[in-house]
Length: 252
Image (cartoon, rainbow, N blue to C red):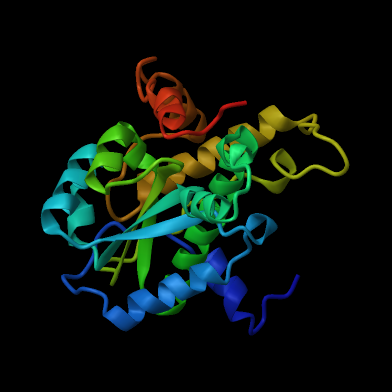
């Protein structure tokens, strides 16, 4: 497929996560534009089941840095927390004497998750088109209760992702993705017969990438990375399910 003069594909295919930022805050107009881009993203059943919290208080950003373990976020030009939100629709239900039960269900929680994911990626794409960069951060889930308290989140809301946006201070190399036959199937799920061989090749590609990149080089393959992920303690984020339920979700 030709990508000639397709600036959108060029941008998508050249995405890298930015964790080193220039000491320069985003303007109010830039923030408004990014939020507006999110608002134009697809949303499940047009229910707009998410909200965005801009974190500007340095003390709160510092606490989020402690929660995530990524202190570079305090130097980003702007920090968003992306929130699953059925609370707003709960107010509509109450005002119209409608039964709000469905807002508490797993189905509606997942719909909020979908809305957050799409809106978050849309903000990042919009930011990159503006000459900015950023990183999507699931690490706010390391202590979701504390994030809920920091942001005064009401019932039927849940913080899902952080998003650090700013002016890039470096240009990381593009991280190689796995071969399409290992993740794109025709009609039904079926790993290719030569999956192990493809994985071995991909492991070498990833290892070469980490060994040659300009910063934070290390000796690691994709398989090594997955095994390391599996080696995390069984207690890591074990409170998530209960916290989600405490917020009023997952009644069935």
